[in-house]
Image 1 (cartoon, one colour):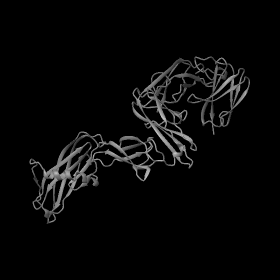
Image 2 (cartoon, one colour):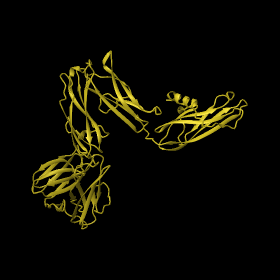
Image 3 (cartoon, rainbow, N blue to C red):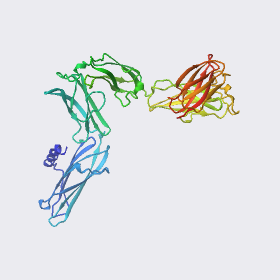
Image 4 (cartoon, rainbow, N blue to C red):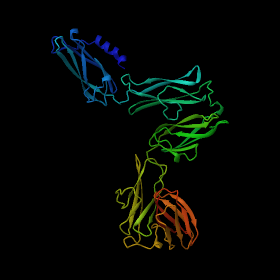
Amino acid sequence: MKNGLLSLCFLALLCLPQWLSAQEGDCEDCNVFLFGFTEVIDGCSALFCAHFKSDKSCGEATYEWDFGDGIPVNPDDINGDLASHHFNGNGTYNVCVTYTVTSPLGEECSLEHCEEIEITDCNDCCGLQIDNIVITQNPSDSCTVSIGVSGGASNLCSDYETLYDYDGDGTIDGIGSVHTYNTPGPHTACVTLQKDSCEVTECTTFELEGCEGTCAECNLQAPNLTATIEGCKVYLSTWGEGASDPCHSPSYNWNTGDPNSPDPDDVPIPDIAIHNYSENGTYTACLTYTVINSLGEECSITSCIDVEITDCDGCCDIPLEILDVWQWSSNPCYGYIKVSSSDGCLDYEILYDYDGDGTNDGTNPIHVFDGPGPHTVCVTRVEPNCETSACFGPFDMPGCGEGPKPKEEIRPSARLSTTNSPLNVFPNPAKDIINISIGESERTINIVDVSGQIVLKQEAASNSINSIDIANLPLGIYFIQTIDPIGRTTLERFVKIQ
């Protein structure tokens, strides 16, 4: 960087404007004169060239710089009368340089000069830019390429990184600009320039003529991608990908082009991915199709498609609803709020308001009410950019505040009928097996987790004891919900232990 700018400083010395008047220093033996300094400003960065003069008898001069922003001076940025500095933001800075020489008598002779400079176009990205990507095949190995990049950053910003993605799937493969493929393509290579929080990426697609490689036997067929967009959500699918024998074990790796790539729940089957973006923008979604060749090597081919999100308000489009309020059987003041699933929404939290007065009471769906009612419950799904709310009620909690009620008076909500069929659960807590005693009518037994999801289900005959294997359930609190043929419901809680 410094070498590239020496010519600027040299020209400035030759062409000093006549209005730059010299200022004489205090040390007459050295005849120190100041002509000021010149600067070249580019974005957040600036190059300074100081112009002093003194007698040769006073030896070599030293320069001490202060850029007026409180940031310690990096010695690597100083080269005598040349100095470069990166500012953190726009503003007016008082930049000072002190010129010091030593007289033949050993006396230090110094002169300081300060000037105010204006930084007005600082976005802290140093002009990161990629103009073109050039792919060059190795003449002696047609499967090996080198990647050349025209562009880069301002010559005042040298501390950026160049990263390469040789599969085009959004995964950075390193800083090397040479790569060997094992198929003729088509291939997608991407180059990323990074500096602090700034980043710019460009990609190019190409084929390697004459590259047979060890994957030639697979005769890989590239995926054909389609995208169906609904608000923030995209449905990605593929067709046409394939490979010939003896290649086997196909796998699919999706990348949606943003930090929240699909998790396993977003890929219902390998060739379909469902993803929610958090904001509008153009995203490059890619699918890498991989098989194993006869040598046990991975052979891959990647296809990408641009996804244009234009109608995303940042809210998940999955409806929010309070489905029911389940009342405890033996403790009628206890209620469990069953909320519709928000699976598919990203980065959200469900908050509960148990008084209906707009006060956040936390994230617990279980609440102890203070009387028989009437009560109102509201829930709010809080996402990074928006909130969605739903309320339920008014409803009553019969028996609350009147002492415990017998189990046969279980009342799931104000909307549902009660049943007189007793429900006995043992042991509770339980480790491997939970036993449920059913009364006079046949019932459906649901084991429900605290999020309201049914994790186990079993049909039960009347007047029977039903054993359910819970060994594989995670530790925690669960509910046993039974439903008779006319829809009457009972509810009891149990705890799964180790």
